[in-house]
Length: 471
Ligand SMILES: *Cc1c(COP(=O)(O)O)cnc(C)c1O
Image 1 (cartoon, rainbow, N blue to C red):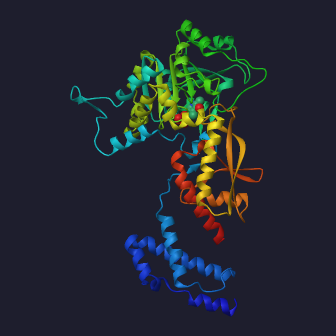
Image 2: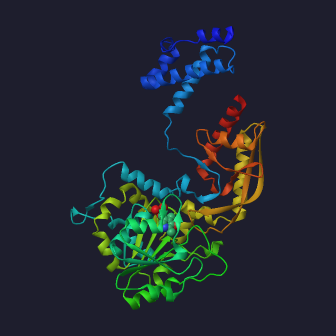
Image 3: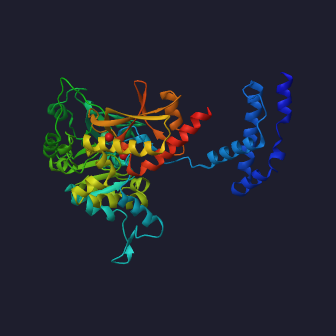
């Protein structure tokens, strides 16, 4: 070690001294002492390390050390779960919290969480009520079902339905529908957990009515169809329709269930999003019970919705698992508010962000990109260039895997920074921006930038310009 390095090292102040600096005393008034202590130790240790490695050749002045401590403290006191800006163009992005909520849903959460509520209290009779009563009527109205039940998420809905309908007995599923939905949701494993026995029929690409008929026996409890949400089998294929399965089930006296995955309450085909029947249409084809998510295409909070016949759903309401899978009051409040919007289709399409983003026309998105760029340019330095490019967004949430929606992308170029440097810096700002790199360009998709993202988008870009200049 050279003498100069040794000199600088001995001049780095001791922790106890730093804790007596007036500016640090001020930090101690705003942050818990153990946090300040950790931050001071960390910054001093980092400083010593850079001196040893030779990347720090002069002793920074006290002001710089204080700034480093303050920034470390604010980093440590920021919440871990935060708002981010979704520039990915994936509308229902599971890693980014799936569906952003409608204003009405957000308001409902606020109202119910700030005080007591009639969650399980029947205000008419003055007696104990059911938490499920708040949404059952709405769900029946919107799907045409006889009965409905909600649980924590669709995975819970599938487990509850299978446990209630088929524990210890056989469930027949096509080999073309044994799907895995990201994370750890795999139909064969879920089946095993519910205590039902999986009976696979047909082949990956083709399953016929006779395959089901040959497999039906005295121990068959259920015929299950699973939406092949996130993949498509093309070419030489054959599948048994839900209507055919329902006829088969009725003849054999065996209930038929559909795990619809995303679950749509509105026909989106007028908006170019084709091939997904609504839950009402599924039920009209004769299926006994359908399960689907609350936070995918529906655009509400995390929830698992079960809609179907009274005979099938009533036992689920008394099943011991229900308590463990039940939905909490905040999600229930926001689900109810979201479902209410569906009473008027036009209102649902304009006020539910997920539906709005999916049904935006290319023209609307292009104008939106124009607005974003104009707003940002007014406030950003010349070192930031914003360039429009045509591109494609996707629905996400395991729905419409082949669908590509025409969109407008905004390339963000920051002078002196590479696309990957820009990407990683924007990911570390106070409201992180999540985009993608394509052909050496960092891009964000105007479709998934929300109205209330404009201000944080600008602030994060300003922050990134400073962060990159310091590097
Ligand atoms: C998404 C999905 C699930 C899981 O739903 P969660 O609400 O995420 O629990 C189950 N089945 C299918 C077919 C799905 O697409």
